Amino acid sequence: MPRRKIAVAYSGGLDTSVMVKWLSDKYDADIITVTGVLGPTAELDGLEEKALKTGAAKAHIVDLQEEFISNFAFKALKAGALYEGVYPMATAIGRPLLVKLLVDVAIAQGADTVAHGCTGKGNDQVRFEVGIQSLAPHLNILAPLRFWEFKSREEEIDYALEHDIPIKVTKKSPYSIDENLWGIAIECGVLEDPGIEPPEDAYQLTTNPKSAPRESEMILIEIDNGVPIKLNDCFYSSAELVKTLNRIGGKHGIGRMDLIENRVVGIKSREVYEAPAAVILHKAHYELEKLVLDKETFRYKQDISNKVANLIYDGLWYSPLFKGLMAFVDSTQETVTGKVVLELYKGNITVLSRTSPYSLYNKELATYTADDTFDHKASDGFLKIYGLPYKMLTLVKNSLIEEAK
Image (cartoon, rainbow, N blue to C red):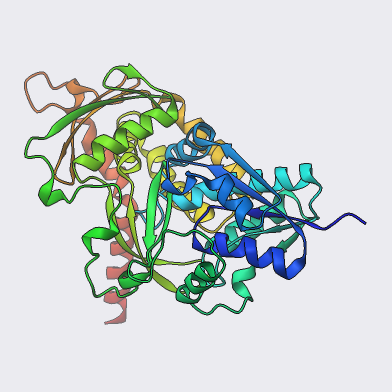
């Protein structure tokens, strides 16, 4: 009888490294590790060898960087999706793509079970399991971190050392880091105390704004139908554009975030993020939308942006509502084409200019000079009609007060 197969979402970090060995021993199954590469990370070095040495029967490593940025990160960018108005959601946006890869490999390899390394009080368990149920409801799901014997990362480190599992994390530097092209999430250790300033060694990608260059840097971003296509008049692939912006923005201290956020499971957490490219592109995209979208569409899209962000954060990328809202978003992006010039300086982004062939800005209507073509007399009738409901409310209220005297 063939051995049972379990496909494991594998990053090579502490949790999943320990999990491969633990699952192999616990279930006496062939462990198939599945790794989607969403950005450059040191943990990819020797990852296949590490997985096999740890107990995996097979190791699948797939470069998804271009697909991640083009079909996932830029989709969220078009939606203007920032969780709780700030966080570009690098981790949350990457999960549905990793789920799709995990499911595809599991089915191709004949595995009846998939496993992930998410904790029982984190967001990612929701993103993985709801995603798996949406794409392949027949697969069994294991979440060892919810029921295994380890009670702390320190105990996991001891287990890894005991079984010669190579890990980078140490008890002196216990940060948990999730990294992809769209950003980096750092948690654990001293960061669990929101009353303590993040130590400088927690940041992986960005220069401290205080130490950033004294000279500012101007960049030109060109967007077509809501999608960034050029940086400083040069065409880039989506992934390369983001990589380049991460380097430029990181040098100037752009994209640092220290947030208290509401997790899906109902608790608050303190997270430190770095996302230079995402922050820069969201700024440019937003400024261009303000130039080309009519008032009601722009206002309504602000509500949709918030809802889309919540759906992504809550693991509902593959839900019917997300699909429907994105159809609206795509319709709004038909005129989001143009150029935005930004100045980067010591952690700050300043908008210098924005231009578009679809611009709704009319200088002759907006100016206060002699070139003004706005019909000021039209405002008289407009204001009488616009203010009429509120005038009537007060008149009726005053009448009732008089009658009661």
